[in-house]
Amino acid sequence: MNTVNNQKNAGFSGYFPTWCPGCGNFGIWAALKTAFTNLSFTPENFAVIFGIGCSGNMNDFLWADSFHALHGRAIPNAVGVKIANHKLPVVAIVGDGDCYGEGGNHLMHAARGNHDITVIVHDNRVYGLTTGQVAPTALKGFKAKSTPSGIIEVPLNPIALAITQGATFVAQGFSGDINHLVGLIEKGIKHKGFSLVNVFQPCVTFNSENSYAWYREKIYKLGEDYDSSDINNALAKSMEAETKIPLGVIYETDRSTYTDSLPQITQKSLLESLAPNLEIIAKLMDEFV
Ligand SMILES: Cc1ncc(C[n+]2csc(CCOP(=O)(O)OP(=O)(O)O)c2C)c(N)n1
Ligand code: SF4
Ligand SMILES: [Mg+2]
Image 1 (cartoon, helix red, strand yellow):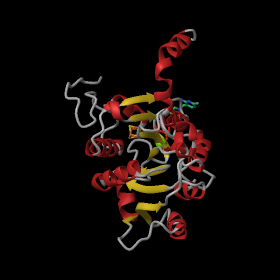
Image 2: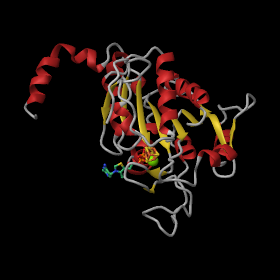
Image 3: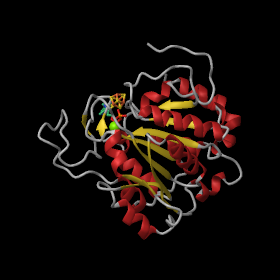
Image 4: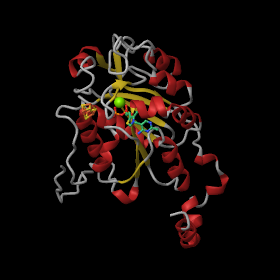
């Protein structure tokens, strides 16, 4: 059972996580709280949308104005919030199953539209909450409850997918390197346009193959000399997915965002325009309760 602690600070809700001891989600939680604090975010000046999963359970542990969406539907909810109030920073926190499986179509279309949201993916290559079925990023041959003889499909490549579908910021981090991850999250949020931060997150209970040690053998950080504005460089890096794995900002470019292209909200956000009628809208909504 959660213990309530009244210190709502640095993004901490006062409820301690229920994740398994050693879970990579702790590192991502710490990085998010630090990034939000560094960006001076308080609940009233940003929005967080969670998917369903062990990752989505962070909804209870983070001090934010948040919405816990249906499985696979965090991204369209985040896009909706952004269009309603494009002045608000919007962050979607999702699992690999949520974002690349059930919600994979939403990822592609949000990237195409360059919707100005930041998607943080807890990539543990497994369905954690439902106790260990394979996820789209599971490596070929991975044996899990749902695939006792090993998964037949090849893994989805989130970095290549996001770049080729029009994402304007694509980065990759590791939950075992919190300081580095903080920087990536901050850059992703500051970026104007669709940003994806794929975070490798060991699931110590249902994925013993892709452990902290497994990642530490393969990951390396992109150096100062790496040019993240060159799409060909980025695509080449995206193909380094198994024997060596790059961490850092893999691709970054400028393109006008979806809301920048809506003349109706140039002067005022949709929320500001609707403000005088919010009471009427609330009454109409009550009819559906
Ligand atoms: C529409 C729908 N399908 C399936 C489920 C059951 N379900 C809940 S969480 C989950 C998988 C979660 O995996 P992932 O998104 O990778 O998150 P993790 O638990 O690994 O953080 C599934 C299949 C659901 N809640 N809703
Ligand atoms: S099942 Fe895996 S992802 Fe879920 S809390 Fe436990 S270690 Fe973390
Ligand atoms: Mg997962």
